[in-house]
Image (cartoon, rainbow over all chains, first blue to last red; front, side):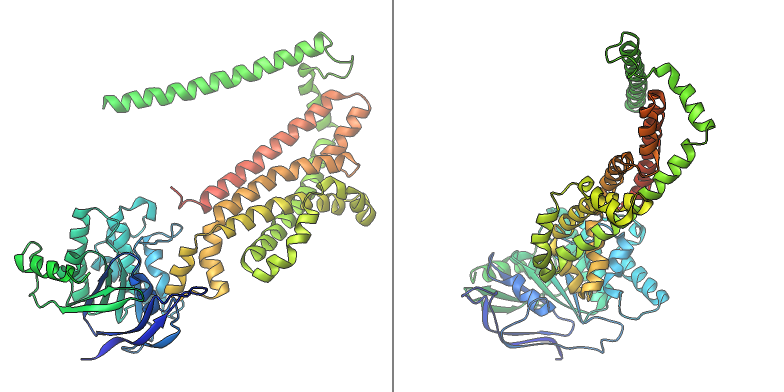
Length: 243
Length: 262
């Protein structure tokens, strides 16, 4: 199966730090796959995501992000834990951010914005300022912004950790629908194993310092999945034993 | 419904109370002022009579001195404010974003900053004589420092997470980042500096004009010289009115630019 991200023996340490966050880390994400990465706090999950996002540069090993032609698109779309909308831009202009500088015509830009806002159920909030949105809506704008660049992979850094349980569950459902509709692969960071089991095609567990993959588990439960199914609980409990 | 009615009532009450107490405050001040004049609390002839101020206003207007003085002051004001604001903004923004420039200018800034703008009057006269340019120069110095500090601090305090966001979405170059993150994120602080500069410019302006540059300050000085203290008050009120107008215009512009804020 074609891959969109390939990490090979990747090593990274922060400047002026002796310790390695990751060393010899290898894994890949297949096209269209939903891969979750779980691990305790401080294990380096967000750092790995930033490496894949191109925001940090590894000192050793190789990292390849491949996919369809990147013309008019960006290969990666990043969704932040805190939503991170620019407060001085309304919803449509926040979504527009990644499209700027891609040499797209205004018509295409507007069409893309409308498409992703429609997909994320935000069409009626186009002109709102970020402070006028709920926590869940902020996260959906973050997802729409990442989808607007038509990425091969959506990189999500604990995007639902700051919202309440009911909102989180509804956002998880929406994410599955959006992921299936977009066709992009997802690399999803979370510390919530049940969330990972519910959403993913595959879960990898990180542990130690430097972080290592201590377990890898394909989730073969059919979709749509039942959140409260015993099979899902058992699977999550089993994954938890590796943490 | 009852709650809305109550809110309507309380809002109205607050507004009405403010208007009544505000007018009472002005009347009380006028009574105090008139008493000071009538009972000669100060040296005879030095306290203007508030009741003669409207007449003095008509005299100054009729003599053709008031409007040219305001115009002349506005020329100094706008040039000084414009130059000081633009230079203060750019120097502050560059210092906050370009490391070598920050290091390069920091001792110089510490050396020059404590010098009051009026201390430069000597050089303003030497370089520009008693002219519009000299007054604008002195004003621009005060305005420069206000804007420099406001911009420097606002830009330094931009949340670095926005830079990471811009980089993640392909907006990482210095110019693009400056336009899409630094400028909008620091705009509340920068505009607060500009607004302070709008007030600071008036204060320096009058002081500079008292030294002889044509304008309201000079007219005040001339009027005081012949004991026409009511005319001095006319110019003081003119300064207040023009300042209130500029502040109102700026406040409107600021509100338009910062409408994204809660």
